[in-house]
Length: 292
Image (cartoon, rainbow, N blue to C red; front, side, top):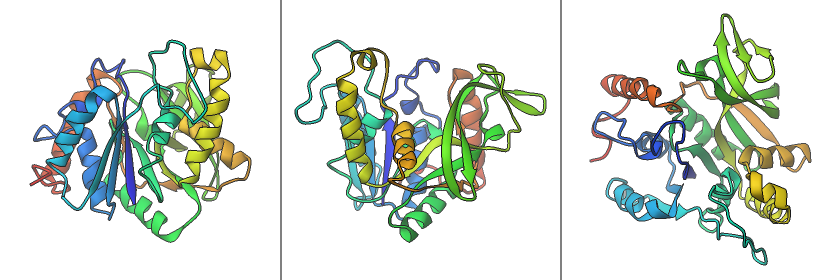
């Protein structure tokens, strides 16, 4: 089983590269806690997608810490990484998006894999549930969901994918761009829609199969032939999965994570994240330092 961490973001709202901020009790990166939790649940391969300038540093950093029997791939997400026969000659500063980040790993992943954000904490229970699912189901995709009201920030509005489910089947994920707690409800300030807060939210913890790579490649070719999309848009992983779901090419389960999530969207979220990691370490959920 493989854990893929997306660590190519710029952290515009945070003010620096969140992926390499030293939040742990022994100055560990947040992604190290995700890797630690995955290894405790029989994951054997770690893939990190980052910017080209960070590959050498991150490869050396993680290689010095991870057990020697764990396969590590640190890959660069680059604008020049295109499907065979495709070309791009324009100017663009932003990466091609999260789907392209996943596609970057197409040559190193052969089986089921988990995709997460490197700058989010997902809780130990999520990795146990993901591992159990991948061991018991050979075909389905899955989303590990989190209770919406537990994913908000005290320091500003957040964007969340709100899940529609039927039983344990995921029907859709609808992106809501400006969610805030207002009294007893969660309000989307962008649309005026209200939610109870008990809905499942996507925090981008996906269980994928290798079939996702061919889907992304085919969509990427279409994308590259659309001048407007090249200029203003990105390829998003949730959209790819949702298109496959709606076309009945795959089934997607929604699995309540059973754990707590936190992220560092804003610089002011940092202190709370550090306190949470200290508390979890003090309670014995993590050793300190994480790696010996």
